[in-house]
Length: 262
Image 1: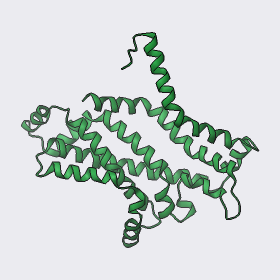
Image 2 (image 1 turned 90 degrees about the vertical axis):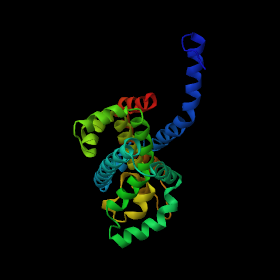
Image 3 (image 1 turned 180 degrees about the vertical axis):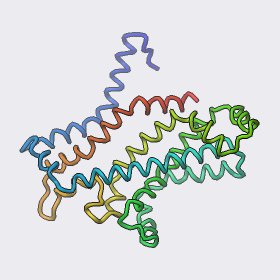
Image 4 (image 1 turned 45 degrees about the vertical axis):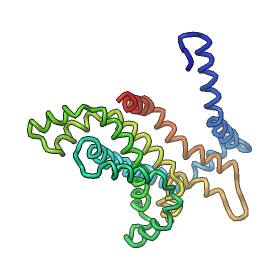
């Protein structure tokens, strides 16, 4: 391990962090540079002039907000049950839930497509929100349960002695205690819901119901491919989530650190 108390250790750690960041930063730099080729900021003017752009932002916000609410509520409830309630076979159920982490979106497209048609929710927000929430709940439950396992059972037992029901224990004891890890769950869910491309592409056919991640495809035609506009649209679609992450970064890091310490 690096001893950061020495100058050599600090320089070594800085070098390691720089090497790890380069593979992730390089595509972003290339995307930004490519978006300015040719007309420069004019590429962004063309992208921002698209009449569907306000609808894209609105739809992305609605889908992200609905997904966050569902994941937050169900993940905390499930983590509370797995950690603090005496549920028969809870470990088996927990590991069955974690198996869902191995399922990629593309494998589920066909059954999801058939299900949305049967339920009559195809080309609606729910056709994207429900699968997104289902795919993100297992990891959120994993984080929340790891945090709740560090909460002393005596706190829950004391609330029960005072006459609190399981739901009252959850609402008035567990929810306030899980604010740090809840912040991490909200940030991760926001990033996943905003950046998802495949589900909106398949389940949202109306241009006014599509999301911001589909903006670059408006500059890809059968006989043309405007690379600069595509890159500019990619920057525009990614910028809101980058800003949101920067604003919520300290809460995200605090939540993960709290979960690790627990």
